[in-house]
Length: 291
Image (cartoon, rainbow, N blue to C red; front, side):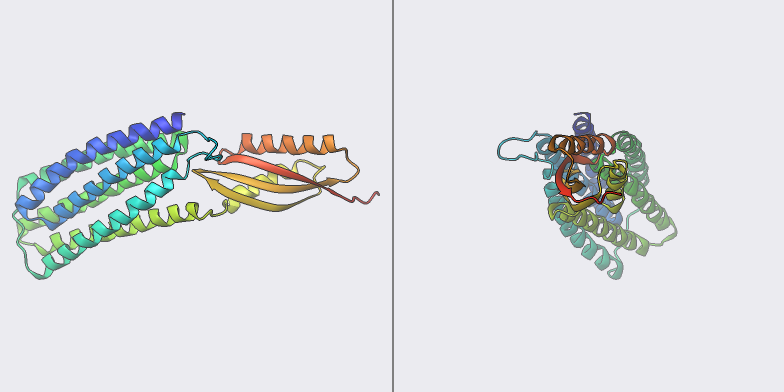
């Protein structure tokens, strides 16, 4: 349960932090006519939505399995992630259009020391959130928190460029503001597309990674009684996988002993591979030539 609690806490902190940043970015962005700051404000709005969706998706995913959902509710995380990505891409396209238009319309940015203050404040807040979520992601190996951690880190970089563009206006370089706004929008589209792809892969039952599959085979190889393996299948269950496979043992072996081997194998895989939610092993007899 610590995994779900950690996501909940990270989501709440993300919501609070990003609401604060959205307000100050939005006010200063529109007052100074900074397209980069406005784009950054929209980015914070997307981050708020992302944190809310993460909170809701995590709450649903934490519900244990029941009669209607035998494998639990883990895929809720990815349904909400896909919704987040679609909304963020739509927002980024609007901001990208406005930023490009500002480059060619020669909009003048009204420099304000508040632009610098907001940028520095954003970097501090996002760096704190990055350090916190990065620590949690390593502790619990949680993909949702890892995604939030990467987002906070990326925001630090984006806002740093925003700060540079604001300072450049002091030497009458205004076009950089629109360019930075465009780059932020493009970055939002790229990161959102990656979220969409990852969510799509899970919802479409993408198979387990070759690395994890090899780990399963390495465990199987330790059992000399298993002569062959076939029908290896995997299905995502939230952030974990359910796998099924067929093992072949000596046909002269008793049913009790062969199923005892299968039970032991299931326990070993579950114990050694955290990414495996459930292992189902079928047993088939095979003719073994006597030497």
